[in-house]
Length: 173
Image 1 (tube, rainbow, N blue to C red):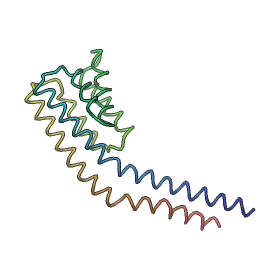
Image 2 (image 1 turned 135 degrees about the vertical axis):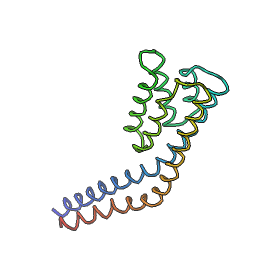
Image 3 (image 1 turned 180 degrees about the horizontal axis):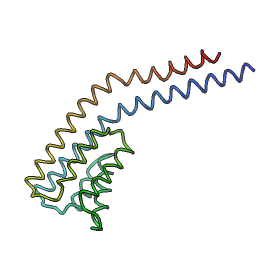
Image 4 (image 1 turned 120 degrees about the horizontal axis):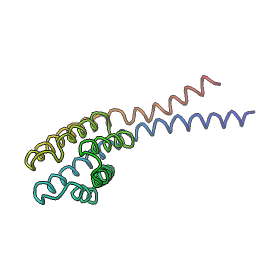
């Protein structure tokens, strides 16, 4: 009977600690993922402004030069617009929705990207550059906020997971 309780204690502590670490990990991943997207938007701006590359080709080049999740954003976007069955804005918003569910990016981060989708491919290169720079600035601001949140909340969630498990064990004993 003692060993069953000991195994239960270990499982509870392991489970709650793992949940705390997973939440803390999201705080750590978000600034890196935002930086990846910011850099990729800069590369897209270069492709649009200097090379005058068609959007699907430019997005494939950006995906090749980017890291996760920006590479997936632009690769999926390029695939969506290559068949020409979808409007650019609709395809962009679908891919941004995928980003929200599969990355550590917040709703505000994805909203900044979604706002960019309303102008991609609809205006001249100068106007698109302005919108890309605006989105990059917004995401850079979000990145600064996420760095502050990471410093504040990462250790909190790591300890909270373990202490919650410990409290549960004490209550159950």
